[in-house]
Amino acid sequence: MTDYDVAIVGLGPTGLTLAHLLARRGLSVLVLEREPRFYGNARAVYTDDEALRVFQSAGVADEIHQDMIVDSAVQWVRADGKVLVQFREPSRRMWWPITNFLYQPYLETTLERLLDRYPNVVVRRSREVVGFEQNKLSVTVEHAPTSGSGYGAGQAAVDAEHIERTTASYLVGADGGRSIVRTSLGIEMSGKSFPERWLVVDLKAKDGTDAFAHLPYFDFVCDPALPTVSCPQPGGHHRFEFALTDDDDKDHFEADETVRRLIGRFVDVDEVEVKRRLVYTFNAVVADRWRAGRILLAGDAAHMTPQFIGQGMNAGVRDADNLSWKLAAVLRHGADPAILDTYETERRPHAKAMIDLSVLNKSLVSEKNERRARGRDVGLWSMLHVPGLSGWVRKAGMKPKPRFKRGAYLGLPRKPLRGIEGTLPPQPTMRTYDGKRARFDDTVGIGWTVIGFEVDPREVLGRRIATWESVEPTYATVYRAGHRPQGQIGDGRRRAGLVDLEDTDDLLTGWLRKAGHGPGTVLVLRPDKFVFGADTDVQTLTTALIRQIRPGSHSPTPVSVPPSPKETSPR
Image (tube, rainbow, N blue to C red):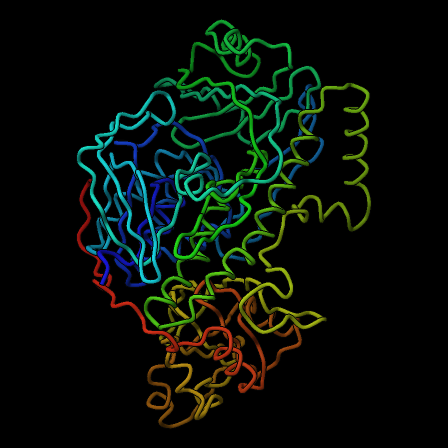
């Protein structure tokens, strides 16, 4: 027996998201955080529709989305303000907006407050991890009281005389780029550290002013003399980032006079308050391995993404989604612990692709050579006037898709043509059996989902259903609009225990038909909603579940406390 199912080191967005997901999946969780309080300044500024879908699974999306700026255009502009490229995608394939700007202190405090719903989650601040060791059954974590470092501003004072030892079945290091978990394991990071320095300035509009009303969009200002990023944030906040040259002095650029001069190009300096100014560099690196036995890495501890496409935090949120259901499968359903190896094989290629795209965008935005900058501007203009290519660019077609690398994921092999295995399906608004409208993910829950396309999947599975019961799936039938059975006596009794849905917008059923799957198909979604398989041959699906997940083949660890939301109160 262990004290907890999972111990998490780090209470940033990755650790918070992971704690919520594990709690909802019935696991007991301990979160250890070195700092006594949140940073209080913005770092992450953006989240997308895919990450919000994860937050939806965590049961927090609606609360945190209330504090975001949504559907803003993202544009690349010249120094004179002329728009070179504008990205604006109104489509809501995942139900959520694609563009959402946030203020990280709002996000983090809301996520921590909402953890109070779970008696199976314990958050302990001012705890420094000073050591850990593992055996075949558990991980023992040693942690001591600490004053915290102020997020790197000072030296933490650790009370080594009052060390506590806690055991957990698994340990997840979500403790950032300087991860004590990763460094203690001796795991190196590969990639590139960029020497280019940027000055970040976080502003707050003074009461009674509309200091940022003329800056409604996210702008990459492609000015060779001073490349700049301008980012709107909720609650009267705004961020600017300015690219420095090699000869620029750090202290000079962090000085009040210099900061006022730079932001004065864009705002009335008397209408704003400077909340933070900081010169920084950035890294584009990935940990050489993400798992060492019962210890795993997530978020910046596993990969660091430059800020130029706003995907650093979102990469950690995706990690939490992928890892949480696999830990639950091992601990609750006795799945083979080897499935934890697929966490890295699935997540690494996507995280690396996001890093590469961010570096590319950095190169476009921060070009200081005027001749090459003119060539960049001509190239961007040309792309927008090539039939077919222009729409792809405007809809950010270059962004890595939520699709696992072929042959490196849990699920049936992806079919050569129009294969949907290992991809994330759309999330439509569904019409339920009682005529209500609801988001698809909310109707089927956060576990495995077995869907019949206009058939009851339980009837198709037949005697194989006993195998599927071992992962406790939700069974659902999805109909095209107007295709529900009509006039059949006793239909309600037959459908007991089945989620009955009508896809009135033809988003999910149209996606299936485009992939070559018609009525009679059984679609299996993993708990993270990625496609495990789709086929009319249910024996193929069942065999894949047995071989890859092996539910019940290992003795599951007893779960300490099931999730039981309680009334929230400020932490």
